[in-house]
Image (cartoon, rainbow, N blue to C red):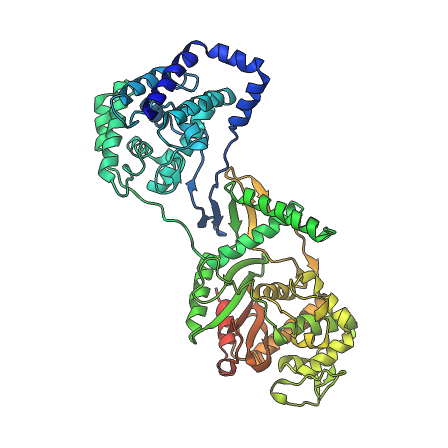
Length: 619
C-alpha cells in the first residue's frame, strides 16, 4: 500500500513540476497564506560547521589541531577543474542546465525502482544531494524525495550554480570524519588538493559515493576500482583519451594518512584559556561583565560571551604562539624525571626575557589534555618567594635613594597584636642587614620591613601584576610571608618576576596573533610596557636575588654567567616548595608539592625545587 501511495505521489508530481511550474510560482505569489507556509517550512539558512583550530609554534610549525570533523573549505577557484569535472560528469551531467532537479533522471530512477521493493536508484542532482546533506534525512522514501525537490528548487533561487557546486564540494562526506574535497586531500595524502596529481584526485573522488564501501584505509582495492570507473566516465565524455586514462589508472597511489596533531597539551590547554581572555578583552565582554550591575545581567552577558567564543572557535582560526617546542619538550622530560615520589607534582612557567612571552609550561607529571594544569590553575601560597615583590622592592621604592641593602633591621622575636611570625627552624636573630635578611629569608625581619612600608602601600605595588586570587582579604601581616587565602600560580609569579629584568612590565602572553584561514589578523594583544620599579630598586633587587643563589637559600642552583638570581619559598611543614628568578635569557617560577598538601621536608633537603629551577633556565 505504501509503495502504491508513493507511485501515485511521484506520478502526480511529474506534470506539476514539468508542465505547470510557472503556474505554481504564480499561485504561490498570489496566495499569501501558502507563501508563508512555504517560507516557514523551507528554511535554507547556511548550516554552521566547526572548522579546525590550528595552533602554531614560534617557528610557524603547527603543533595542535582541535577538531571533531576535519574540514578545510576551499573556494571554487581553488578546486582544480579536473576535480570539478569528475563530480559533474559522474553525478550530474546537466548541472548547469536544470533548475535544481532533473525530471528525466527522476523518471529513469522511478522506472528502475518499480522493478524492486528497494529504492536503489536515486536520480538526484548535485543540488538535491546538497539539500539532503544540509537539511534532510537520507531515508529512501518517496515523501522525502518530493520534499527534496522543493528544497532544491528553492536553493537554486537563492544561490547561483557556482556557489552550489562550491558548497557541495566542501560538504561532501569522505569517510573518517572528513568533509570536503580539500580536507580529503590533506587527510588521505597529507598534501593540499592543488598538490595532488590527477590520479590521486580521482582516487579521493571515488569515496563520497559510498564512504563505508570506498574507505581507502579499509577497502583500498574497491576504492581503486571506483577511481577507474570515474576515469572511464571522463573518457566517455571525451574529456580524456583512453591512453590518458590508462596512464592515470597505472599511477601508483600511496596514502599518507594524516595524524591529528596534539603535541604539548600543557601549552595548548593554556593557550585556549588565554584565547578566551584575549577575545573577551578585545570584543568588550570582559569589561561588560565587570561592570554588570546585577547577577542576572552578569549571567546574561556571560552567556552571550560563551556563544561568541563558540562562533570564533568554530570559524577555523589559526593561533600563532610563542611556544619554543624544543625547550618545552626538554623541560617536560627533565622535570618529570625528577618527580620520582608517587603523587609528587610540579607546575612551572618560563618567560623569554627579550619578548616577555611564555615559551614553556609544565602542567604536571603525566599531563593529559584538559587535566588540571598546575602551571596556571594551581593557586598555592608562595611562601618567601613573594617577599621581593611585596616587601623588599616596595621598601626600596618608598624610601628613595637613602634606602640600601645595607640598612639594619631586627631579626628578633616579633608580635603585632596576636600575630607572631617565627623564622625558619625557630631561630632568633639579632640586628641584621636587609641583604642578610633577604639572603637567608628571615621572616621576622621581613614582617618588620613590611610593617614599615605599610600594608596598603605595599599591596599597591602588586596591582600591575593582576594576581587573580589576591583580594582585599589578603591585606594582612601574614601576606609578607606568602600567607594568602588562596595563593598564586607559577605563571603569575614568573610573570611578576619579569618586572625585575629591567624594571619594566608587560603582561606575559603566549599568543602572538589569531588569524583566519586567509591570514587576516582577527585578534592580537596590544599592550604597552610600564615602569613598575625604578632603576635603583631594580638594580638592588637583582643583586639581592644573585646573592641568594651564590650565598643563601638558593645555593644548589646552577649559576649561569653573566647573571643568575632567585628567591626560594616554602610554606609550613614544607608543604610547598617554590623558586622564582631569572638568568639573562629566561625568567621562571616553579612550584613543587602534592595536590593534597603534605610535608616534604626530606625533598626540601634534597633541593629538588632548586634542581628543577636550574633545568628551566637552560636552553
